[in-house]
Length: 210
Image (cartoon, rainbow, N blue to C red; front, side):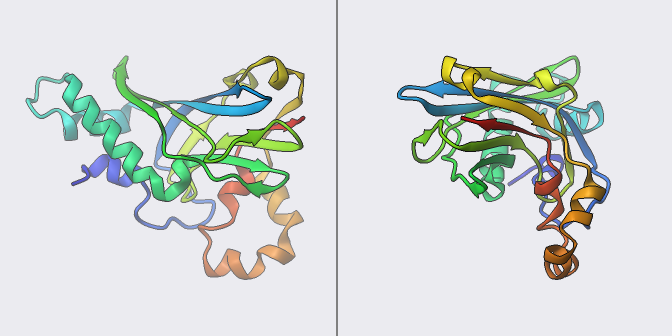
């Protein structure tokens, strides 16, 4: 059974569009090149705020010693990776504007550093993704419950010769501008199901042109 704090993180309740997030995390993302000029994997790092982290500590500290043992951290990791499956692991990857299907994360680790929850995991495309065309990568919560913040452009990193040869830029969309530009196409879906549109459009991302 999911613990209370992580259940909230996994956005089990729809949140109105552009609502204020309740959980905050400093995010980093490393894009790793594979053989034959492909995108091998994305390495996510999420460093959560102290309030949310303390809630997780209370939920998972079985022996109430204010420390998390390896088995307790493993329990957190399993909850996170299993719960995020329905939300594409908060991972944004597109090729020429079309979503890229990602495989189940092959690595995940939970830790605590300076009283804050630290989650790191690696995820690969379900099929080989050639470094050709326009590729976008990022991380976002579809429900807007969790804010994943790439504070600096350097929070995105490229690992590989071919990747670094691609033109690349960090994009930070303006929510008001995005909604204004997409007014006609957003009308029905935006008002009928507001959790489906804005978060992906306004997510901070790294655009690559290879």
